[in-house]
Amino acid sequence: MPTVRPRHTLTETDDLSAALHLAAQRWPQDAASPNRLLRRLVSAGAQAIAPRQRRARERRRAAIERHHGQFTGLYPPDYLEKLRSEWPD
Image 1 (cartoon, rainbow, N blue to C red):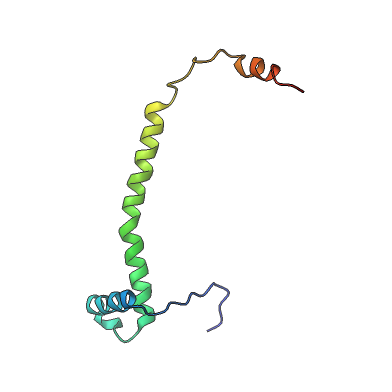
Image 2 (image 1 turned 180 degrees about the vertical axis):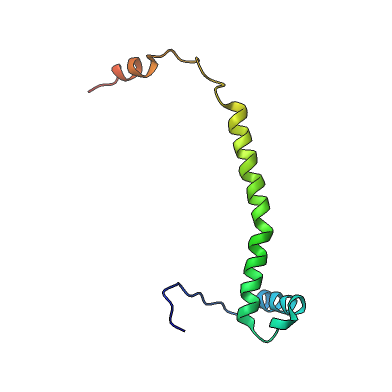
């Protein structure tokens, strides 16, 4: 079928074969269509890793919030200008 979207090719390795076998057991209505099983596996995998990535992002943001402003006032306001004035032209 013509499409402007990228296509991907997979070689059925032992791992992929095992995954397709599991997928066929999980979605027996699609057991005769490896393409549908692969789409289901990709979707299930994305749903499985999304929460972990969301939690990691939340942890990073929380760390930023914890440390936000921690070093305010450590250097005087004209620190960079003074430092740069020492550099040769």
